[in-house]
Image 1: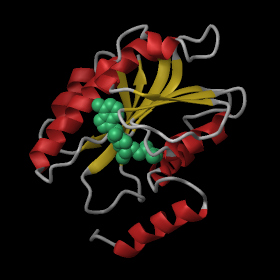
Image 2 (image 1 turned 60 degrees about the horizontal axis):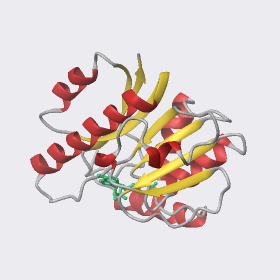
Image 3 (image 1 turned 90 degrees about the vertical axis):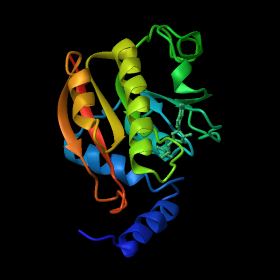
Length: 201
Ligand SMILES: C[S@@+](CC[C@H](N)C(=O)[O-])C[C@H]1O[C@@H](n2cnc3c(N)ncnc32)[C@H](O)[C@@H]1O
């Protein structure tokens, strides 16, 4: 399918109309509408959250009994929802039982039902380099998932397609089973990105 600027424009306008900070939300929404991964009351970790449209949407789904922790290397402006917490941190620095994470989680909670990772490296325009950086971010996101995701919990993570994709999928295979590789309609058609939906074994 060729690049359709009108469709791109539609999602940007629609995000604005619905009060979302980014059009990215429609990609997550499509995955959720199809796979129903996120449930009311869920505890969610969102990696690469800025400007915050995923958190806005996740906060609505999980409701007052749920919780969403958003982490980004950049500052995320307040969402003004009691069930959210925002942390400015490089995900590379996250460690098991990270005090920055543990101290902001609701009492007794130490793991997440779902991890969403819409991480994107600073794109260079060089396809192979952007792919390599995306794989590195995914490697870290899946490592974080081995520490923080509940058994049978799901991770939804964005990948930039390239030569190492298959090798990466094999690398995570001992700990995760892949449920789906998904390219939402809301993704810019020119873009090489798609989402890996995987369950922790
Ligand atoms: C496409 S944006 C995410 C959009 C977001 N899902 C939303 O709905 O608004 C990708 C984000 O990944 C973040 N990012 C990239 N590398 C990171 C890292 N090492 N640690 C934390 N965040 C990172 C970027 O700062 C950027 O905000």
